[in-house]
Image (cartoon, rainbow, N blue to C red; front, side):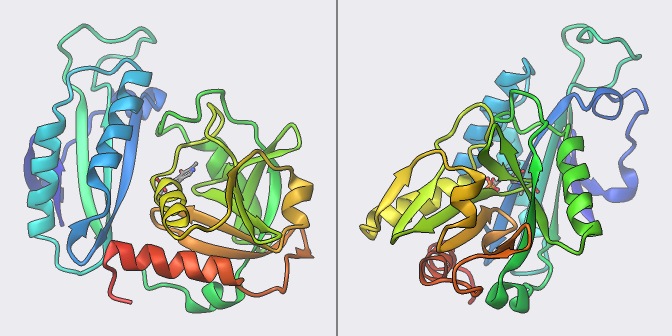
Length: 280
Ligand code: PDD
């Protein structure tokens, strides 16, 4: 596989990551995941804008976004499938372990690759997925897309060990988001998702869905909602770059709505794939 590594597209075997890399030592880095539909990036500029906010959020300077974009495009040229996902990670570079930042001029480590998307799980899509709620014990800067994802990893694993698809984080009784996706509910015909705060990652898919809903004059409110609101909702779904729109039909063992993907979820899912120019 070809990867982009510190300014050049190389064979993956050529990558030599230092054990002094601050990503390895401190999770001192940020990342992005961008969906590739029909050999094109979906919402590239928005992902780059969020990346710049994340970089500023951890005071990481010296990253050339224009060069990244060129690199991503050359990766795309050698990508063999129609649909996939680009992963991009930037860390504060390699330097002998010390909590303080390395000296100015230490080059960041930049890595990108594109992998084909796994085949969609149609059964999960039709029947929806079952999830659990979990205490949101993450830090207070969730808006930064940091590679420090241990709470997310532990919550996802806990869900998997119970035979569930995912965990939805709840902070002070209110739903924040899932381990790698945002959460929407539908109640009384109205679409509801929490407004962005520092406790939620501002998802690009979430933003696009809000735009689609507005274009279609679907009733929409940006309002915090509780775990109880979610249990009583007519529909619940997750949104994210790799998740796209995914119906949730069970939360903590309780069936949501009809127990099937609901009409609003279906409409938004289709609209999203249409807008992305996806094959189906
Ligand atoms: N995750 N919330 C969290 C915690 C996420 O990690 C993600 C994305 C989202 C959805 O954001 P977007 O729509 O921009 O993908 C929300 C990526 C896909 C991941 O970690 O793999």
